[in-house]
Length: 363
Image 1 (cartoon, rainbow, N blue to C red):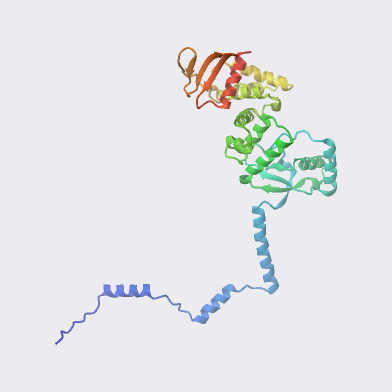
Image 2 (tube, rainbow, N blue to C red):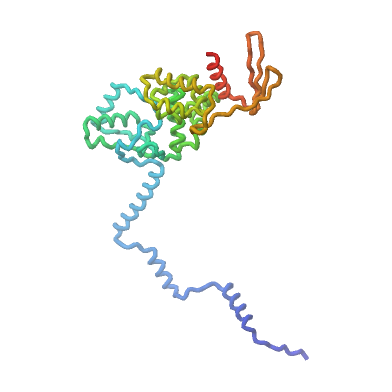
């Protein structure tokens, strides 16, 4: 005879566990009737108003989206006050304009307005009170400014412009430089100035990066010279009146002096404002360079620290090795005396610096 099994009532814990498992395995049901759910969905999808009003709202939504997309792509044409735009924010090579051609352009604008908008970008630097820097359309902007200066007519007070994104300006700067390089041979100072300003306006991370990308086709030696002139612009650009006339070898000497801490002395001399021309200005610079040629810079006066003389290891009487690893050796060949520099640290910039120092010593 089979043994009867004794039944026991589940405990409170068992009942809680069973109910929890039931809730997990059973999908939740809405307490509302199916027709109520359908009505709610229909109400959510319903748009109030007449068919014409709903069509208008749909068009406005579509147009707003198109406007946002066009604005993001830099396709919106604005009317900007001409006094908020800095014409010289990027380049200085267009300092001489053909008067006859400008007269024709001004006459055309006076009749028909500016047909093609200029291109600008927002200036991030605090060095100017202008809100925008000019990217393209220099002649159009100058012509409009001339018309407003002569007539004071309200229609010439603003100009059609497209605002470009500064974060995407690297390519625009490169294109502008390539255009200028093809059109005319710019000076090293003008190239250095363009690179420095491009970095200041946020188009490139640093001036070094600007030179590398904007003058990628140039040789390594040429880019080194441009960096030197970019430093001259950064340190003395606000005081120099005739910087484009600085010769290449003189500019390299000036850059070397700036690296060695002559910035304060140069700024003090140039700040006097006694230059009456390019020769007079360079004479002021030359006096400082000569006085600082064999003088250590006083760190207490500020400026860039002068490089302290370091001990070198002489190997015999005709060769020594610098702390940076450059070996300098003298000798004689069939053509005369020879000084040879070897080592990984030997660069075109170093060669130019040595040549400038030798030129000074042999005067």
